[in-house]
Length: 614
Image 1: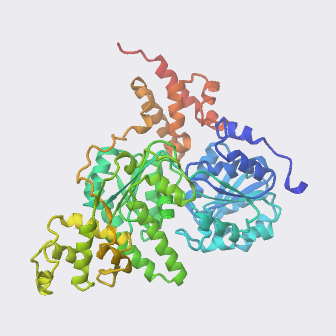
Image 2: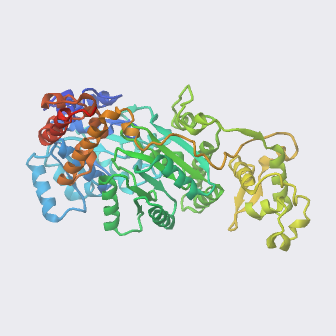
Image 3: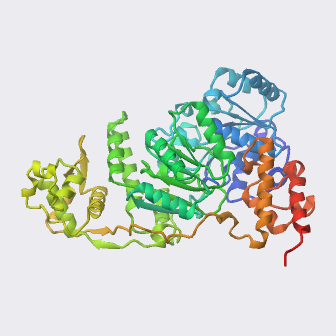
């Protein structure tokens, strides 16, 4: 209808070039923008770093009125509003962090048509007072960010998201867009159904993040493994280390500080002021590592996170993809490292079994955990498996995951598996992995002797393998369903699936443990962002970074809000000397040229004027 296709205030291409400083749209961005500009709804699945924000920011500027963005986190709102304001966009947010007089000022600006974009938390939006306020202004669109929060099966469920279908009911003529970076087929359907977006156009981009190198290894002194990774490859880089418990977060952060790293803890049990300060430092300082539970990360728009490390197993592939996706938003080389062990499998399995959900919910949780374990244990390309989970096929192995770079070796584990399963049976199917391994290896410790397990027929028949190798066998048999872990003491129990193996009717190939030391893996990524910069330009690169840091500190924003690394690299390569030449560098828009251009041009001109050393 004509009411839904108002006269545009500005052409989307012009907004892209002059406000955001880019010359061309990426992927489906233009199609999504055209859909919203014409007044239709859209559901967008696009990987982290794929440019989701522009899909609603540009239509909000192109259409008359103010765009309303529903976002689940205060940090995300502040981050995006700062970046928009730096680009000259009239943006603001309303949330509980603001004093009353600031809230009044923003509401007045909204009523007077002085805002292009307004960010709101779902609970703020759903207040009757807010909804009434929105009826009094012209609205360009509604954008529902992190839309997977609507899924009750998901890992980031927010109850307030379930009520956002009221937007369709109360503002039927205002186009809506729901966006997420993580949603399998089931979650996608749930988003469409719960937000009344069944009739919306769906845009599903490739989930692939080719710049992220995926590595998964079993735990073998995980602190030593993490320390080697950080010292060999990530010195001075920003990153996130995820742990399952709050205590482990604090202990790991303290230990990393003792090792000389700038590490900060983050979890929901810390005071709100401390969490906010740690997040602020992560965004604005270089080389900060945040050690966190999953309470940290959603909506963090820091482009230069060079690594994400998991010291515990994520409970689903969706959670793993979402969390690893916080690395390398700028498209530069980044690493996702996951260390996992049998204790993770047991702990997550128990958490799923003890949850308050229905039996169907528990079954789904177990299925998701099994899919995550499957990703860990495969011997083929991890990226292909990860993409396949999201219904995307990649024909060729990626060449940038651990199984591609160092194909795992396998061995005929039939005899070892049979020995282990027999020992579990002979010892009563009620003891944990460590005790069963002690019996297999002929230990004479107190517990083995106490239960007379030195007298069972399987005592000492497994001396050919180390305790660590036997743990690998146990873990793989649990993952494949031959063994299950039960009870308070995590006893091993046989399943029906192991019968053919015990009868000699089938064989099993197991993955070999990697060598304990992998010091040669991967070259250092300390300077990966500047890897394609000529050594002669290194002083200019550092001078431009220094200029950016000074401007960021002066304006109270993170450095990347001034310019991303890719834009600085463009300056190094083009060496612009005039405002028009600087404007031609990708990422430099009109507003940033006016506010920051002269400072960077001064650095660039001084570099060109400096005498070249013989």
